[in-house]
Image (cartoon, rainbow, N blue to C red):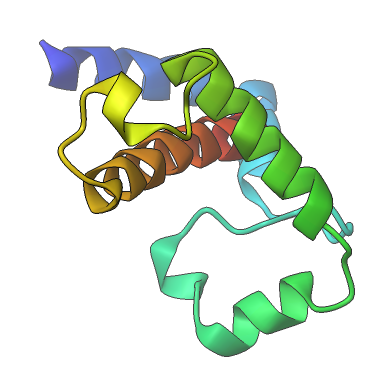
Length: 110
């Protein structure tokens, strides 16, 4: 079932020369400042430093992650007792999971 879906998607993308050209255009990385590679192989320490060294994204990213945690867990997103976790480490693990899901979603929309 899933393979049929992907096959249909590929056929829709590459059925004619113009749609194939458009699909290839979308797949090629643009040389702008907003592009972050989605391939795992490109995430080396040097590549990440090069991508984010000159950018001041710390504050905005932390605010965005906290807003998402508030949305997911509610107003007590920093209190492990009220959320029912056994200790602070379990809450940190849950925060990490929520953050990763959110960042994957944001990366797909970029």
